Image 1 (cartoon, rainbow, N blue to C red):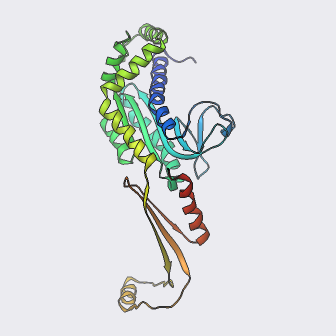
Image 2 (image 1 turned 30 degrees about the horizontal axis):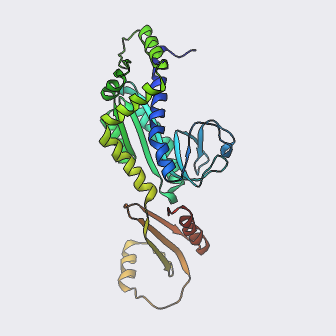
Image 3 (image 1 turned 180 degrees about the horizontal axis):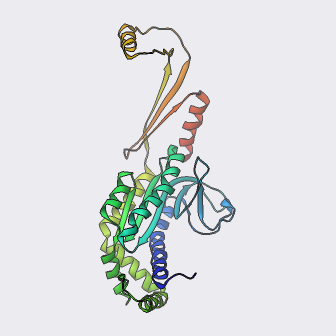
Length: 292
């Protein structure tokens, strides 16, 4: 069944937000020598048209944008930033969309935790404050273009993007026709106007992204844990054991290694590994992804 005119117009606005996102992200990728994975065929992922990434559980996620270190058309790089975009009309679906974004990004952030990737969302339209706060609580960086400001920007080129539940299909068809007739110059004018109306928010989002991509390691802490494991069946006996315990100089093999990496922007990565070779492999990863 064909999409309703209202849904079709919503898709147009969603496509426009992707154009705006690329207007912001491409310069960042170029500046830092990163590959921007997006919805287009790419030999590195078997020419799938979507930017599909797999988490450690084997689940595949179709994403909007991934900034990769060392990536190319033919080679998957290190995922240093995930950015999703969404335009929604009406707040009743905003929570569902936020949960959908969480479900796609959080497993990949966990899978690639050794990169501590940036997780960002570019939203436009109608989203409730609790939905946006939910993303922020999960450490997403959020750039939100409000409906009123977006509508103001589109009016500059003669398009009224506002509507209601009673807007007739013919009005949506007229909006679609007007949108399709916009020139590249006019679309760029709308993008620049939306950015200008949200300049502080845009600058803050890009700065957060830049900080993540350019952060430098300031401290690497490695704690080899030696000793014998004592298994005690009650808390009382455990307290007695600790009170009577005396450290000795007995040479025992390392049971595990705790590694902590700190960055200048406050990011911190921690890992507990049981084998020396695993620790070396973990640290060598950071030789590869540390920016110059």
